[in-house]
Length: 530
Ligand SMILES: Cc1ncc(COP(=O)(O)O)c(C=O)c1O
Image (cartoon, rainbow, N blue to C red; front, side, top):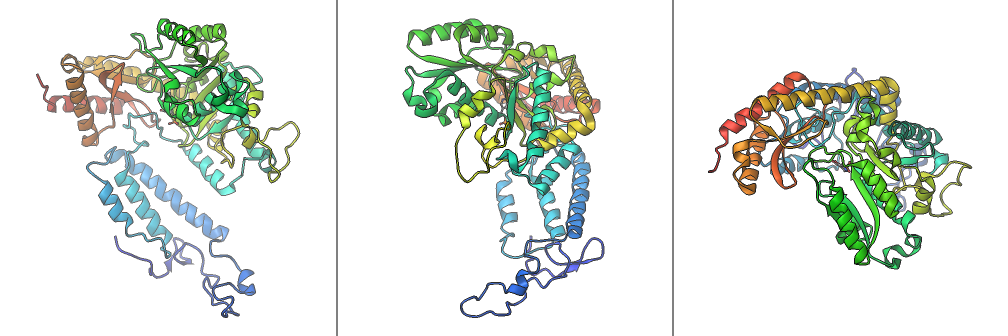
């Protein structure tokens, strides 16, 4: 990579003379100030200040630049399926070496930088847009979602105060209400878009603490009579541990409840742990059900957990970050039975709703608890609009991006039904995957209707936890190194397995055959330690 900070001007994509940044050469960008002197050296003159600033482009140049970007992105998109799903080898040094060519001090041609960046992304990222990325819920985004993110960036509404962006706040609310309705949550349910599931779950803990303990708002955990504890299954997403630390509860407040043979929270064990905690003077305040565990897609026994939460008087949160999307499908929605009685719910649009990264959702049928949790008074924020809450005082964030547009646009254009059909299609492909792996001698160890399949090779499985983990990890690595697919090692209740999860709307039946073949090849190449 060579320095091109002195790259000459060249023709733009449509024959217009563009300078390095992609703008028409209509203004002398760096004209000498006409009254430069010792006191104002380096400052622009008044006449220059009436011209465009150094970061401004004409709309025509902007369109050319974005058109070029869309074309390059589409090319990238078309090339990804033929490229290895993941980069190989130790790439950090290579990436840093490449970046050392960018001192970021002087301009370069847009087209060159864009091409360079896309080439870097093609080489040095795991392609979540690949039809054979069978990974960690990161979706292939829809084009409508991408367009939504572009409009968000360009119109750049600020959603902190309602009055700054009523159209944006209401569009988000419209989507949140649809999801709430599909999950069967009560009419008064409100919520917010979040950066992802972890922020939505953080919101849940803050709201639960606020609802359960009157003194929490002012005194935090210091003012509580007993040590607060929360319960989630041992297979839940462990952002809970970080959240416990961040909220001042401390990691020790998280009680990880053992799971049953289907990797669902074991209600009998939960009852025992709760009784022990009460006897020890603890203050249980939150019960968390996971609908679609990260590792194996288990759905906790939500109806029983609802009953227990009511009996104990604790807040019930359902983390449906991944599987909450099945609420859109009439056929699959019954799998979430019980969620309608939750005190709060997490659903991520950037998982199974195929939105570009950075789109979680938090919902609660206790809207007053949102302002109780996050309200703050300031003189410098715009006055509140009657009957419309300001998101900065009902959510974790302050300045707030229009996260929900990518979801609104995709739902408005493709429709709720198309999203449900995609989810049902993924479930069908997941069944095909499970069948093909079984035919090929793999043993499935998770039990879920959702499209995540965790399999072991029976002979390796019998060798003991560590040897089995090493062998299954080696197989997963071989598949990834082959470039044919991305799969991973998982441990379900400690038992190592290879995890294959459908995450891309580009995946077809032929891709299932390919990953099965890649796994078979890796299995054949990986010797079993005896
Ligand atoms: C069940 C569950 N909850 C929460 C999260 C965290 O979501 P995010 O990575 O969007 O913050 C994940 C991530 O995979 C998850 O699977």
